[in-house]
Image (cartoon, rainbow, N blue to C red; front, side, top):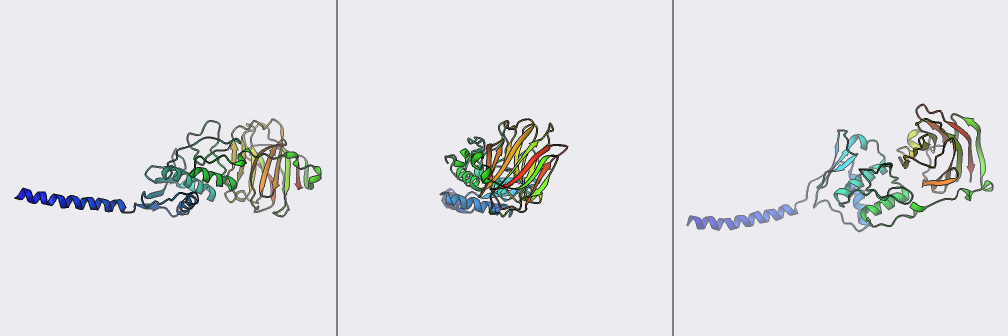
Length: 324
């Protein structure tokens, strides 16, 4: 009789445990996202919805927290099971676009199951927001995540089969504007170690800045800065004697946009640089050859000046500003 009573109790207990298990499956998983990250999680969900992805972290949970220690890992890491850690020191130095890109990259791992993809486009830029360690030798980790490029990178994040964008093969003709198409508004003739002037034009105006630069033999940076009166709101075009090339801007603009660690088109001695603003784009030419374009942003100031790092003693020659 006692054995029968025990047997009769086992079945109800098993049923109860089963039902409790089902209830546990339906219970929302922990959601622990630091307030600094929440806007970017919301954007990720919204961008996914635009592309047919119904993202709901209630079934998986999500943890995105700061870590204080600076170590050998990158600025962010997905620990698996929707658990992301972001380097506080790294995060504080990023602008809005860069922060979005970082969170989207880590959610690409945790939510979309994406691994790193280090393919490049025809113009040498990254083919995916999911580029990552180990970065192939000779390439920079810098990714231009702005304007039209941002739209492509988000498309590719949610659909790895996204076709390559038109901007990856875009080219501009230096000679599209001849002398008759330009009006000289400022000139600093001759050679000098540094210069400073202004671009006094309305934001809607098209213009061109042209100068020659001999950087000498130093490995330090030299070039020009424009579009703002302070470091954080201006744009910079720089290179070194070792042919390292950089298009950079402050955190109030786009951040770093393009870095080439060894740009073979830079030659010894003087190089002729052209910055051409056309409507909503900047076109960059080196020795009258098109090399890059990026999105125009209404400038915070009108300063145009040389910028020299370290002990560099460059020579600038024949700085000219034209209205187109």
